[in-house]
Every structure is written in structure tokens, then in C-alpha cells.
Length: 188
Image 1 (tube, rainbow, N blue to C red):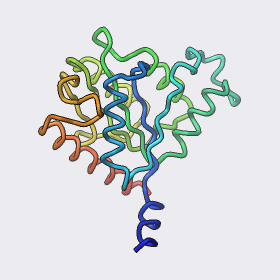
Image 2 (image 1 turned 90 degrees about the vertical axis):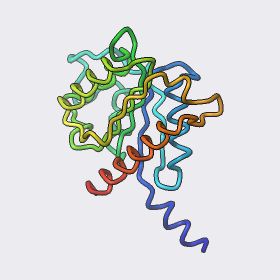
Image 3 (image 1 turned 120 degrees about the vertical axis):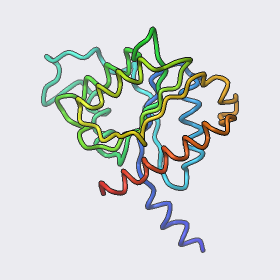
Image 4 (image 1 turned 90 degrees about the horizontal axis):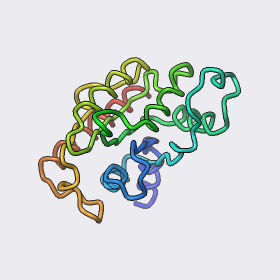
């Protein structure tokens, strides 16, 4: 019995989770924690917490030896089976720190063909969601209708213990996570 658990834990998919909000207790970070709890038997989730450490994108620095923070970020992405992005919408758009991080991957291609699950969780979120989908398509991320989800009014659907309290949101998230897992399995 113990050996079976070890084998299944070894088969977990490596997921890098990125919160578009850099707030310590943001709804999007709490949502990542809720998803981690839901998927801990299937995914080994690492939360990338270095958005604010990435320098402003500058093509002059985008060389074979980029800044250390950029190099570390790229390695994390490259060594993952999939990428989960949970982000709010700021001023009808994508948070600047998240867009900056994505810009650092345009020339190096870490998102190219990589399974991505995108969850935009905000008051509205529609504009940021659409913009992020455009960016993810440009950088050739592997994303489809089943691996993207817009959660409006996230604050009333997630409690302070990182539990999803809205039944429809939970059902939709479970579908997304199943599709995300299938995508990662089909790549490897």
C-alpha cells in the first residue's frame, strides 16, 4: 500500500503557478492555494513568487546571459509540465508585473507548446482575460477553451481559509483542472 502512494506521488505533474497579483494575501494567491489543495495528489505545484524581482523587460538585456532572476524564471518554466496563471484585472488590463514576466519569455520560448491553464479572477476580469489570451497565443502557449476560466466577483466565492464556497465555481474549476491534466499528459 505504501509503495503505491510513492509511485503515484512520483508521477505527479510539475506545475508552476503564477499569481498576477503581488499582494501577500490576494484572492488570486488564495485561489492558487485552494487549487493546490484540490490537486496535491496529481500536481506538484510550485508558486513563483519572484514577479517583482524580474527587471523591466529590455531587449538589450535579453541575451544568452540574461539577468539572474530572468534566467531562474525561465528555468522554472522550462522544467515544468504546465503553467497555471491566476490573475486579477487591474485598470481594465493585465497587471504590469505579469505582462513583464511574459515579455521575458517571448524570445526564449518557454511557453511554446507548454500546457497553460489561465484563470482570471477579479471583480470583472474580461478585458485582462482577453488580453492575456492574445499574449499567450503570441508566445505559442498550449491553451484552449477548456483550460481557461474567468471568475467574476472572486471575493464572494473564496473564503479566508482558501476554500471555494461557490458550487458552480468548484464544478467549473474541476473541469478546467481535468482538462489541464489531460493536456500535460498528452505532451509527455
